[in-house]
Length: 530
Image 1: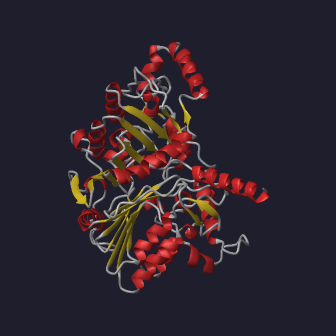
Image 2 (image 1 turned 30 degrees about the vertical axis):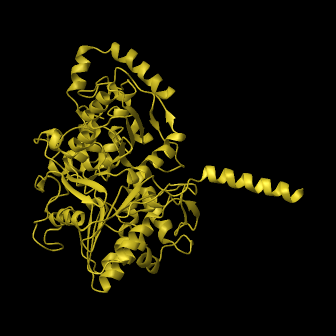
Image 3 (image 1 turned 180 degrees about the horizontal axis):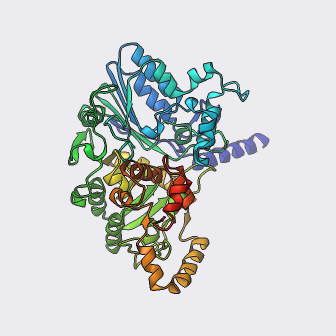
């Protein structure tokens, strides 16, 4: 009888476990999908030595690199993982042609920062510096030795091996928008496209938070010479002559306008478009326009998991789909979901003003939906995905945030894949996030809306005029910023780059922009808003 009872208990435990841990989904032969938060896989995280759920995205990247026989091209906003750097060096040392493109804000080794420079960093950047220190300090004695730097600072590892690299100042500018790409091309055949930067916080988790699993990200590994050719063309435009060459690299709007390209990879139809698109080009031909075209095909459902959603025209397309009985669900990262420019507010039928000034062309939905909210993630982690799933068969993904800046300023990748097997992985990830999500307008936001309605009703027309004359630091164009006193083109570009990393929430935030001190920020106090 005892044995029988134990058998029943074990059987019940297995049943519960099988319900809690989904089985890995089938993968397409040519397009494989991975998520660092998935519950259907687990691995031993290499830096904190923690066993955790998820796909090891770093391992997938390294596997592709070490298999290279001829070429490896890496375009990544930020590279801080030493194991990836070491894999690139190993291939470089055996004669493989390795090239790396970085974003200029992240092309300097952390170990080269002096104590005085660290002291001037914003709190967010100091946290990143602290993360670097814990990553490099292998013996955990609180001291960083030259040997630890040589083995742990990814950019030092590349520099010492003389791996060729450039950043987006190689065109002779101070950097155009953001070099926000996150792709790898190996032997002009294997393409990796991900939403993750090559950092501990984007892939594995933060040292400061043991429960952290890294920002929620996805990765595609695609076997296709035709697709690789398109990515290599994008890479070569940015690379130009490479390190020390003429200023013939092309970043941002210096790149020629290119229409979406289409390739068939096995059973998967893939459309790819690289940002940015000039604001003078009709929106429908832009990368956001391509997203809009995909959304317009929806017949039954659209599910979104987005870091930021601030493109009004995409929200308008979704509203039209909703009026045609398409079920729409959306999860937005908590740091962006309830900002004045967030389209999550539109979908929930509400609006927040900025000093009693509403976003231009703002259009809250008349028939609001209650299927919009924010995911519940481990402490320190963000929803860094940029994906949408249409009718459970079309996937929109890449490095491209759903924003005007990504559309008209940044170097970005957008992929649209039509394949139900591939889409199933994204559907599973969305359902995982949606199950525990906080939906609807939080009480605190409802309270803020009511307070604004009362406050703004009492404002005078004269005050409204003054507010309307101000330049919004989070939405202004390059030209609008350059019209401000003391702001030239380079400073305007830095302001735009800074707001992409973290939106401005106060006048003091301006001082985190290199070249803007307290004096200039004070001079701008009556000219700007946020």
